[in-house]
Image 1: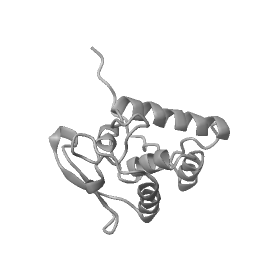
Image 2: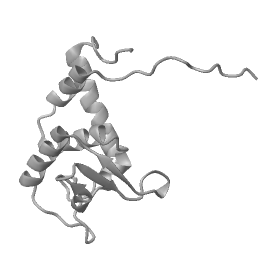
Image 3: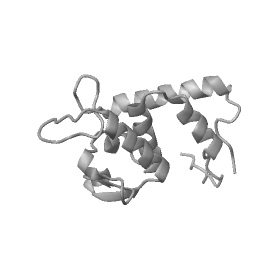
Length: 142
């Protein structure tokens, strides 16, 4: 059996302009808040879907993740841009309780987002941006 060779390439990353372009194609405040929170706090799709309003501390720019990967809890930092978007979203959204908890993000059908649906939506936004930009600046190597 052939062994895999180690990959010593520098990983791909987004430039600041790329991030701005991706977020600029999102017109829905809920979707923008979801994607910015996922990106700036480096959260997994399942962690985004399980967030409650009580997990967000906009004053200290933190988000508490309960039972994240391997069931561990943690605190994630967000930046001012993400906090401002979350404030706008929380001011605009009606309060909604599911099973005694107030989810941060819920669907138009009154359910928590499912991980697979969030991932599908994220890919749709990414493809939309790629199509508009004609793949010119999709990923840049360092």
